[in-house]
Amino acid sequence: LDTDIPAVLAGAFLWNDTIYIPVTNWGKTAQSIKQIDFSKCGWLPECYELSMMDENGVHSLGIYQSKVIDVDLQIESKDACFLVVEKSRSGVSITKPRNGLYIFDKKILPLHGTFVVGGVTITVEASKDTSKVEFYIDNDLKYTDYTYPFSWFWDERKFGIHTIKVLSYSQSEKRTDVVSVFKIL
Image (tube, rainbow, N blue to C red; front, side, top):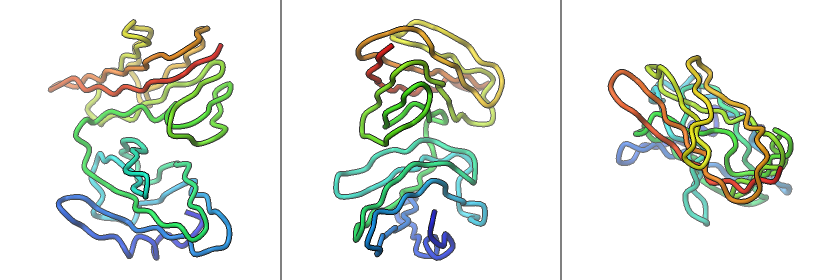
């Protein structure tokens, strides 16, 4: 956060196994949150889902294992929201591309949908026991990655709405995540 993170985290509270962190921008201009550091938080689950809850509802930001995470949040002046931390049930999440406009592999603008122009690196957060991740476009297997961090560069020329699906494998189970994207080029 661009603010004092210990002060923000001091307001966190637990309700029904979910951690809520209130965030309020009292400033006169919009504030960006680019990174969150949970390294001093003993209450953080090993694998967790982070969401933002505001007047428009709850929006998942992704599933993480790291204590320091990169995010792209904008809090308008005199606005408030909650960051919501829950223990992850799925253990796998597509973290890029997600909720934004990506032009030639760079996130340009945060949005509620996902739009891609040109090639994009698909990155995945997965639980520690993951042995491989398969990457699918429109249910066609395109790539299998056996090493952490799991990623694949999608440079196939496509136009229209497409589905990115990842399937992670561990000794005990398979887990999946899906993102719909509108792709040009």
